Image: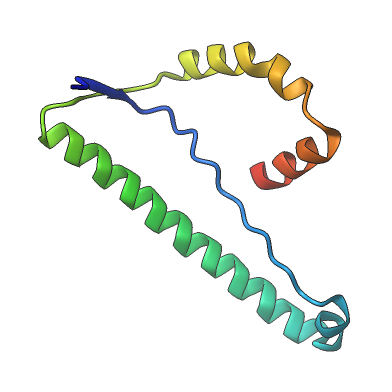
Length: 103
């Protein structure tokens, strides 16, 4: 049985939105702004819900006797450094997608 879990905050968060470019263009500036605003609101809501779900999961495992171990900034930096060669070797298209997701 597991005795501990480490909070590493590695949750990937991104969306793919597919819109017909011709239809989108027909919406005009006001319609496009409404679409962008709705997408941003949906993203914010989902992030909040996912964050809350993860926090609840940590509370649940702690309540059932597991130790929840924090992950320091120093340790996260060490992991990033160790994984850098992996990221450096990714396809350029994947790197660009990851950059967009990060932003």
